[in-house]
Amino acid sequence: MIREFPGIIVVLLYLVAVPPILARHRDARILHQDGVCSRFFVLMNLLQLMAALPIKMMLRWVINLK
Image (cartoon, rainbow, N blue to C red; front, side):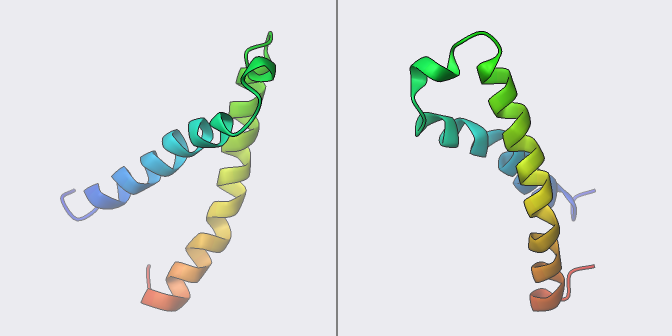
């Protein structure tokens, strides 16, 4: 478990910290309308999960990650 702990932290930061950072760059009034904020965060998480596959592929090729 100690070996996996840094990876778990990185993945959690990737999924939790990136959407608020991206939301800060958008118009705040639009994000606080009914349901727009939750839809934005769902969309961001889905896009992050799609981007995780090429990231994983690159890590496997570069540092032989299994």
